[in-house]
Length: 124
Image (cartoon, rainbow, N blue to C red; front, top):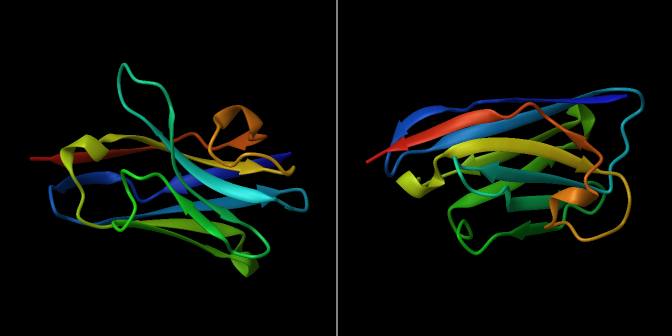
């Protein structure tokens, strides 16, 4: 079993920055892609960013492109989401997820493992 644990969420003013971390542990970890998703109250879970584990190719939702950066540290089995220029509409619970098979990175159902989520609140 693989466990994903997010950290780094919190309360920040609009225009501020936060860095989220997601540490993977458990049996030998091998993912095709790691993704960050978010879910605001009353809304569906939406794709934020993804990174392929081996090549490090990155993908972003249009709403965060240019403001968020996803990266990974293979040695530490950790993926990061650096968030700058945060807006109130970025407020949500952010989830880390791992997908072990090749497939679309932007859709939640293909991901095998999920973290418990971390709250990000951006005040105006």
